Image 1 (cartoon, rainbow, N blue to C red):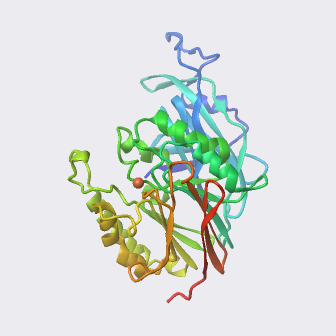
Image 2 (cartoon, protein in one colour):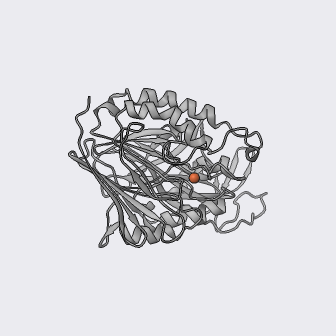
Image 3 (cartoon, helix red, strand yellow):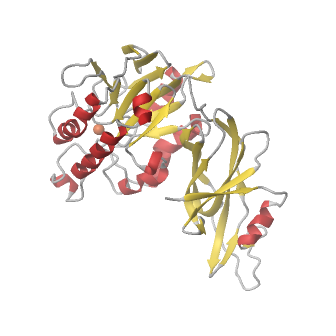
Length: 411
Ligand SMILES: [Fe+2]
C-alpha cells in the first residue's frame, strides 16, 4: 500500500523545493548546459481534483494530468495551507506519473479543510537528474470531514446511466439541490456507468469531468463497479482512478447512523462463458467477498450501527436466473439476512422497483431504473438516529417509491 509523507511548508518557495529534487527550468528550457530544450505540450489537468473516500480523519484527493509530473497537495484546516503531502512508495517519492491519489490521513474530524493541487511537469529524466517545468497551482478548494459521531448523513445514488453522461447533471440539478445548497454528502454511482470500459478518454469525459464540474472538487463520490465496467480494453485500469477503503471495490464504512456495505456483484454470466475468453474469475472473487462479509457483519462497527445499507450493482434477488444474480444470492444472501440489513440498493435490471422484505430477503430492496430518459432514477437516501429514508425519483420528477424505516431493535 502506498503511504504518505507529510512536510510542513516553510517560507521556501516551490522553486527552492523543486531544486532539491532536480533542476527547475526557466521558461520551459533546461538549465543544463548540455541539454537541449525539450518540447512538451502545455500542462493540462485532464480531470480533477476530485474527492474520494472522505471520512472523519481522512480523504483522498485525486487528479489526472496530461503528462508525467511531480505532484502534491497543499492543505490545512485553518486559513493557511500549512501542510504539504505527496505520495511515496518503496522509498521513492511518487513522480513521473499522471494519475494522482494523495491520501490525507489524521486530519481533523468535523472540520472544513482547504486544499490545492500542484503539478510540476517533468520535462526530462537523465540518470538521477530531473528537469522540471513550471508548476501548475490550482485554485483553493474546500471540503468538510464528518464528525466522529455524525448525527445524520445523506447520499444520492445513480445507477446504469450507460454512457449517458448528461444524466449526471440532469438528475443532480433537478433533484439533489435545495436552492443552491447541495442535498447530499456523497454521490454514489451504483454500477454500469459505461457499456464497455474502453479508454481513459472515455472515463474522463463521461464520468470524471461531469462529476468534477458539478460537485467532486468539494464533495466525494463513490464508484460501485457494475458488470459493464469489467468489460473492455480499459477495464483493468479502472481501479487506478478511484480510492476506496482498503483500495478494494468491496468494502464497508460508516457515515452518520449508517454502516454502508459495498459489494461487487461481478459479471452476470458464468466465468466460462465464451464472451470472457477465459479471462474471468468472478466466482472465486465472490467467494472471497463472502469470507470478508462474514467478518464484517461480526465487526463492532457493523453491530453498533443503527442502520445497515448495502450497495451492489446486481441485485441478488428479483433480477432473473442468470448465474451472476444466483451466485450473488448464494454467496451473500444468508449473510445479509443474518446481518439484519435494513436496505439493499441495486441497479442492473433497468426496471425500477421496490421489493418489500419477504422470506428470502428479510429487508427491502430498491432497484433503480435506466438508462433511457423516462426510465432513469435518482435514489435519495438519508438517515438520522431514528429513521432511514429512501426515495426513488424518476427523471420526470415522479416519486416512484418511498421508504421510511424506523431504527430497529438490533439483536
Ligand atoms: Fe448491469
